[in-house]
Length: 235
Image 1 (tube, rainbow, N blue to C red):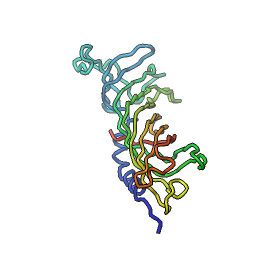
Image 2 (cartoon, rainbow, N blue to C red):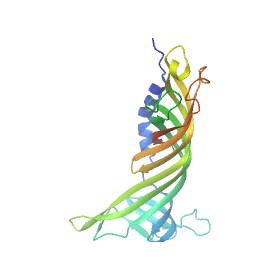
Image 3 (cartoon, rainbow, N blue to C red):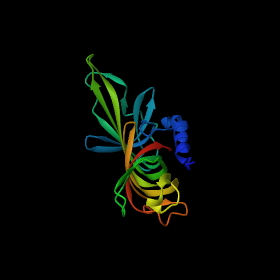
Image 4 (cartoon, rainbow, N blue to C red):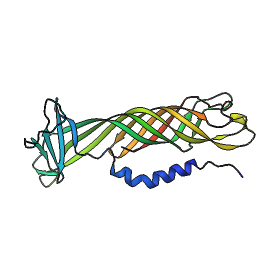
């Protein structure tokens, strides 16, 4: 019987069982917190308080820029719907440390020795650590009823490193192995991730290391590859 790695099954079960948690903490949700607000060419440090579906914008003390001035009424309020043409469009920017779980379903491996270039589709899972920038654009769209409804669009960028495990097919042609089997690989590299609303995709550059006795003869051992990644928010 062919030896099969249980790692892909484990990763799939983990993803499915964790979807509810990930949905609750998704980065594309516009939440209470400190932001850099931009109106036209001006930028302000503000605190956004979301109450009864209204976006209430509070000033921040100039000294520490980490405390909202609760003694001052919100100087801007963006309700879900207003009468007339609408308020000026504005955007809110936030910087943070990013922790993601990445799946890398596609890896492009350049030609190595007698093996042509390949597009591998093995399942891989990796932990991603990086720096993130999120931008929330708030604008009002006119309706035929003479009102305007609020919309919030999200754009996020992340740059960082990843490390994780996956599986790969090992045989006599790729490693001189006496049997054909799915070996466990350790993957490390760099990733750039972009998120548009609730869609997240990234580009990765990495290397793999086979973890068993054929690692020294595996032709892809520490050879660079490029991949397509999808992420799930952990923080």
